[in-house]
Length: 457
Image (tube, rainbow, N blue to C red; front, top):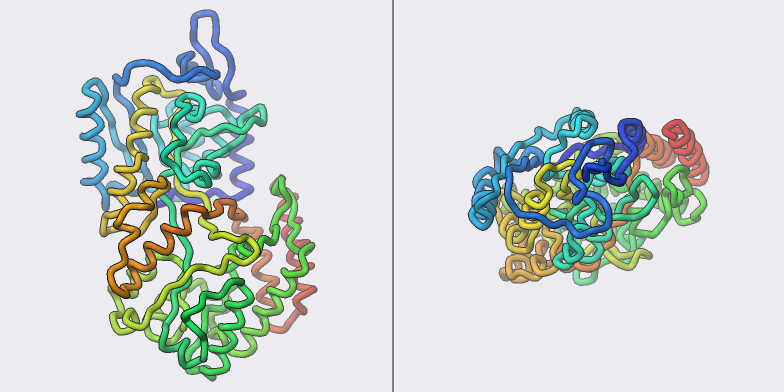
């Protein structure tokens, strides 16, 4: 469903490639034309004025791996849009979202053939904005931000070639984070499930209770820290990277060492399966078998348990993630819808992008039983679908919990390249195995991360 996320280093490469291809937005020529990313475009697509013009003409709309499961829905949206705008036509194409997504998007931009309306992730939008290939939707429609949750709208702010912050995307769909747990197993461990942990370390203390009570018969959670770095640190408001993203700074915060020490202690005491330290498996299977007390933090996991393990689902509870020092939930950047500045029918493209992401269509898609996603408009999150809880049903509780969190959630999650993340994780794993002290592991992790960040430029 999602386009492959670019790593930090790949984002840098993409920016360089695109910058070499064009110098961003510029003024028009004498014949009334202008350029965007080195491509000749209509004057109205660039500059400070509001976009005007008839909503007539054919555009191309590109999604990422959605046609197979959601063909009926999006064809319906397109048909309704075309009915409302008789002179407009929308051609829908669906990118597979494979490992060549980035390179193909770069090629399309450089060839001035970007789809008119395209689903992008944050790193790709960052690069395309800097090179001038995306329409400044915040300028071209001053009212466009109104439906969206402010934090999600803010998350779509990127720098142009001059370093100015502009909005070149509309927030579309997002995920959420919560705690899922087996009430029976936590009760046996003496964990009070009526109170949600308020910090990551409070949650770790509950893990420790499970380890002591279970004595290896079941576990609290999985061991591999790749599931928690940098998510836990973000929630604790530990700065993983410097403001410019060019250096690692997490070792500067003493709580990072405390976090690693806790992980090592929990692993040693049996809170986690020993063979899960380097495994990429999430808790799904073991949780469904009643062998792990805490499940995945993804809301869709609750539906997975409901469908695959009714007996465990009957014992499943949900609660909010620990807000810790951050003071609010974290949601990460959503998926975005953007309009190409190179579009030959920009008024049609912008109108369709806004129609696709409006409250009605976001709410309708999020109600589709084939998907567990959340909208980015305030009115959608207040819809009864998210707010009405059916008895003690964990899945409906999870939907409401996440929807309420998203209204004020932070979207400033740290994005680490796989190489940097793996380098940090490897050092934490050594500490968990008792091969290094927590202090040394954090120190070495920061040094190795900085080496990689320096190489990436």
